[in-house]
Length: 498
Image (cartoon, rainbow, N blue to C red; front, side, top):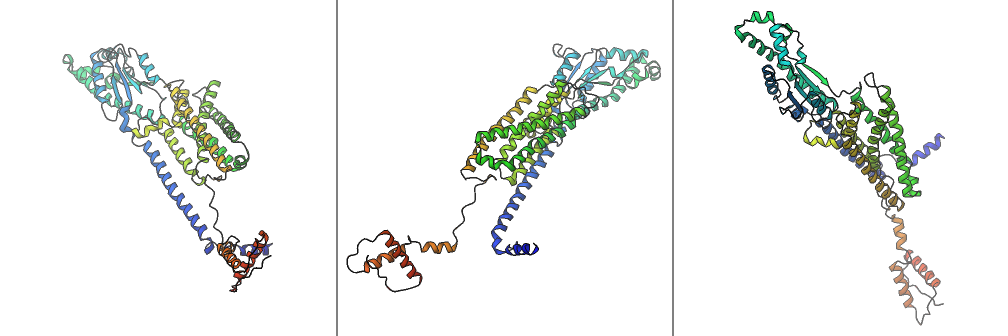
C-alpha cells in the first residue's frame, strides 16, 4: 500500500513546477481579491459601527423636554427662570416652555404626551410649591424638597440614548439646587430686616439647605432586567442561526434541484425551508427570553406570541436577503456581505438612530432598529407606539428580498440548465485550445486545401478522358496523396481511371 502511494505521488507535480504556473497565478489572484474585498468590508463595517455611536452629545438638542410651571408664586417663577436658563447649556436637552393653559393643562396630559413619545421627558414645577416652601422657611413647617419639581421620563426609546438624555436633565436640575438655596437664604435675610441667626432658627433646616429638589416619575419603564441584551444578543442570534444555517445547508445540496426540478418547485421548497427553520429558531429564542425575564416583568401568552412574531419577521428579512446573495455573488465573497450586514444592524441595535449624525439616521430603515422599537413598545406596555411604521419597514424588507431571491433563483436555475452558469454563480470556463498534435492532424484532414489541390493537379496530369470517379475512389486517392506527402516524396502522382 505504501509503495502504491509513493507511485501515485511520483506521478503528481510539485507545487512550483512550471506546468502549474497558471494554477498558481489563478490562486494568487483569488487571494488578492479576497484581501482587497475584506479589507474594504472590514473598514466600512468598523467605521460605520463607530460612527453610529460617535459623540451623540453633539445632537442632544434634538431631544425635547416639556416645561410647565403650575405654580404662580414668585418663588416658583424665580425657580422657573433658573431652570430655563440652565437648560440653555449646550449639553442639555432642548426645553420647550409651555405657558398656554389649553395645551398640556395638567400633569396627566404632560405624562401622556411623554408616554406617547411626543417628548423625551418633561420638567414640571408643581402647584403649591411656593406656598409650602415659604411656610417651611418662615414657620418651620414640614417640607419635602422633592415635591417641588417632577422630572417625567420614559424608557421606550433607545436604551443608551434615554440614559444619556435623562442624565443630562438631572444634571441641570441638580446643579441648580445650590444656587437656588443661596438665593432663597439671601431673600430671607434681607426681608423685613431679619438677620441670618433669626432665619436659621425659625426655618425648617431641610428647606433651608435644600429648598428644592426633584422626583423622577418614569411613565414607561422597561419592566425587564435584560432589555438591552434582548435587543442586541437575541436578535443577532436569530439572524445568524435562523438565516445563515439554512442558506448554507441549501448551498450544499442545491445542484440536483437546479438541474432536475421545476423552477417554481425549487422556489417554493426554498421558501418553505427558510420559513420553517426561522420559526423553529425564533420560538426557541422567545422561550429563552421568557425563561430569563426576571422579577420585574410578568409576561402573558399574548406577549409570547407578539415577541415571537417580532423575532420571526426580523429573521425572515435577513433570510431572503442571504438567498439573494447566494444566487448572485461568488461564494468567496459571501462572508463579506454577511459581515457588513451584521455590523450595520448591530450598530442600529447598540446605538440606534436617534441623536445621531444625520447620515447615520438611515438606521431608521434597518431591520434591527425596527425590531428593537417593537420590542421596547412591547416591554413598556405600549409606550412610544410606532408599530405601524416598524412593521411596515420590516415587512417591506422581507417582501423585497423574497421577490429578489425568487427572480435570482429562477435566473440561476435557467442559466445552470442551459450550461451558461456554474453553481458558484460564475460562467463556465472557456473550452481549452486544441493541442499541437491535434493541429497537425487537422492539417492532414481530407478537407485540407493543400491535399485537395494536390489531388486535383495529379488528376489533371493524367492523359485522356477521365470518367467521374466514385466517392469511395476519391477518398482512397486523397488518402494516398496524403501518405505520399507525409513521406516527403516528390514524384508525380499518377491516378489510374477505373
